[in-house]
Image (cartoon, rainbow, N blue to C red; front, side, top):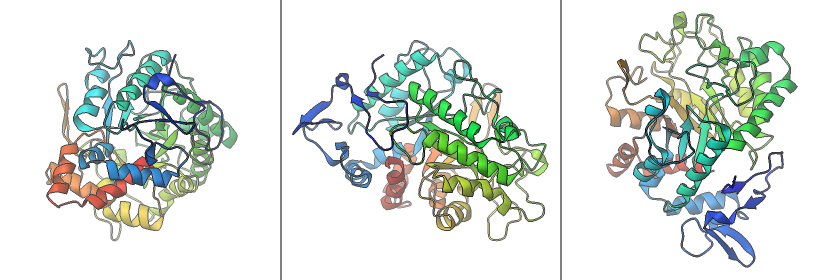
Length: 420
């Protein structure tokens, strides 16, 4: 099966893809150097030149982007995958597909460049769809490639927070890996999963989940490494190394470690996906204990962080609003204390109410329910977040910038992280 890029599955540092197939249609040559003319202007731009530094390429592309294109990068949209590998709009075959928009429409209407997968077909069909999507992305004004992500697809159990393994290899849940306690085995798992993800085009994983399971009634314990912070720190280090390697490179799958600063200590175990949540509590003044696995993830250079929906209760100097709305958590703690300059992406559905069949799911705007859509988006960006999961409110960001409520300079900070 032909692909826009052909990657080696083995580790290889920061080498470029081994082959760029000519079927891309944008291959040009300048002084013997082959490149893709992504903006179709007939010349080699800095951002198209793989010999230049990442920072030079990022800054060159940033200057070329409109505010609409920048806004498109700041949203992570779910997308539908047709069972025959085509990318055009077709009737959905299952419930998860029915609630997922068609990717090419999101590119055309909203300049979306990041998509996450729910229901997927067989691996060869998924790879065919991915190749088609990347070819379509080449047709956009600047030809910015898309990024595809997924929740876990290799776990023995599945549910709303982990996809069925099906044709992916099946391994124990993270809790099982933690019970085994073998760092090398955890890294081996992550490395094998990395290769499977790359084979079908998934370049970012919406995991690992390193929340500490200190509240036994919380229903998400199976996705964690348990309640021991030191063990969780060892496991997440091995996990990230298996997916990313020592540094991000052409053969990495970028990790999005979640849910900062720890989603485990839910009062009475009531999960903040739902309105009946009662916030997060820290008996014995244990807020810092829940940060230990994240400190290990920062040291392992996780590419991204996902804050949870939870509301910190009774913490001095920390407002009792959801973590992604919380400047004390994102700017003061994540950015300033831990000096994290990777991507901060919200969990899914913080702004817009959703109706699934007969069930209403209010937006997880806990503590700021009184704010309207524009105010919620502004509050999230002001808190220091780069990307909103499960939303496509690009017009809202454009409006906020044009009205002077958010500066384009602030938008650029997030877009630089995403482009990098």
